[in-house]
Length: 328
Ligand SMILES: Cc1cc2nc3c(=O)[nH]c(=O)nc-3n(C[C@H](O)[C@H](O)[C@H](O)COP(=O)(O)O)c2cc1C
Image (cartoon, rainbow, N blue to C red; front, side):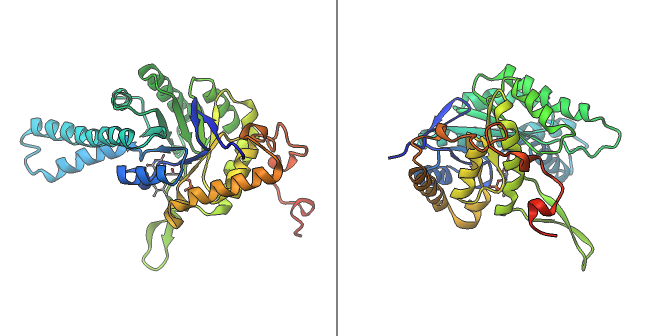
C-alpha cells in the first residue's frame, strides 16, 4: 500500500492534487464535489482587484445621477465592493464548513494598495491559506524590469505583514531574470510559489478583423514550460513549488513531482473531462509508485530535477539540434 500524502505550504495534504483557482472553484456545491472526488486541497476562484474596481465603475456609469450626486458614486463604489467581498467571504465560510480539505483563497492583484485590507477578512473567514495571483505584463517600453519586479515584492511584503495564514504566490514566466526573481521571492516568507499561471491569449479573426481570445484551456503539451522551470528551480528555493499548466493526467502529475513539485494544480482537464479525473490521476500515481517500489512521495520528489537527474542537460537545451531532437 503506497502513501500519497503530500506536504505543501505547511499543509499536510492527503495527496498532491490541488484543484486550481478557476470558475470550477467558485461555488460550495463544486467544492463539495471536488472534495468527494478526492482532491488534496482547493484554491478558490480569485477575487479580482481589477474586477472589483470595474464592477464599481460600471454600476456608476449606468447611474445617470452619478455626476449630480457624487456622494451616490461613493456609496455605489463601496456597496459593490462590499458585496463582492461579502460573497467571497461567505464562499470561504461555507466551504470550510462543508469539506475537510484545506481551502486556499485567491486574490488577483496588481498593487499593494487598499485591497490588502481584504486579506485580513479572508483570514478571518477561515481560509487556511492565501494564494496571490500576480501578473504584471511587462508591456511598457518605458518601464524597467526591476520596477515591474518590485510590484511582486511590495505586494508580498504587505500581505505577509497583514495575515498569519500561509501565503503562496502564483506567477507567470514573463520576467527578464526568472530564476533570480523566483529565488528572491522564495526568501520573502511565502510558503509556496505556483509555476505558472495561464492567461487569456489574443488571436485575430481574419474574416471580421476582430481581436478575440483563444485557447482558454491548456493542452497536455503545455506542461513543458512548468516542467522545465520546476526541474531547474526546485532544489534552490526556500519554499515549496506547485506546478500549474498542462497537467492533464497521472503521467503529468508524476512528471511534475519528479521535477521537484510538492503538488500540482489542475483546471483545464477538469473543465474538459470532469472531476472524476482527480481519482483517475491518483490511481495512475499509486499504480506507478507500486511498480517502482516507492512507498511515499519523498522517495522520488525532485529525483529528475536539474540538481538530481543524471543527465539534466536537456532542461537547459533550448536550440533544436538534430542530435537531441532526432529531426533534421
Ligand atoms: C476558465 C478559467 C478560469 C481561471 N480563473 C483563474 C482565477 O480566477 N485565478 C487564478 O489564479 N487562475 C485562474 N485560472 C488559471 C488556472 O488556475 C490554472 O493556473 C491554469 O488554467 C493552468 O492550469 P491548467 O493547465 O490545469 O488549466 C483559470 C483558468 C481557467 C481555464
